[in-house]
Image (cartoon, rainbow, N blue to C red; front, side):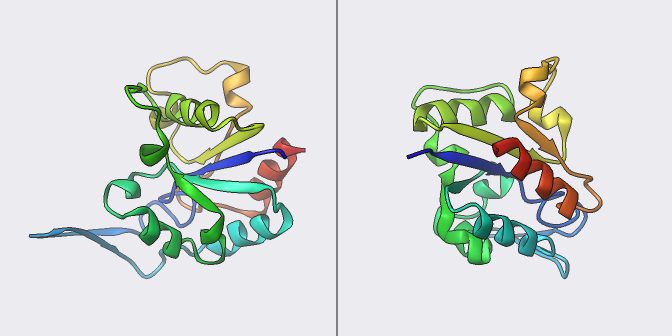
Length: 160
């Protein structure tokens, strides 16, 4: 069976980049905002159309929420979450950027194919010049909008 992985960032993908408000209290961080996950229905619909697709959270939210909490935040797409890049990273591997982090997880999991959806090229590639092969694995969203029908169609098309 093919294992297809979709690495998902949250801010700038599942909602616009300015939607999240970080609230620091003595016990940690809570994230609030009226527009949080406004683009989640597009991800949920994609997961319905592609039953072989699984989610790995690559967002910095993984540093503030446990995998079960992240799964809940993903709504109907949550049961398809297999983990986070942090929880699935092979021991001793410290990639320099998000792309290489996702690639290391995909290789460790034996993924048939994988795509990273993100809004920040500088975070994805760091100071590495992205090759055409690397660019083929990434779908960028407009950080002020997040997922759109067009970016979802692009993701779907890259897997076929």
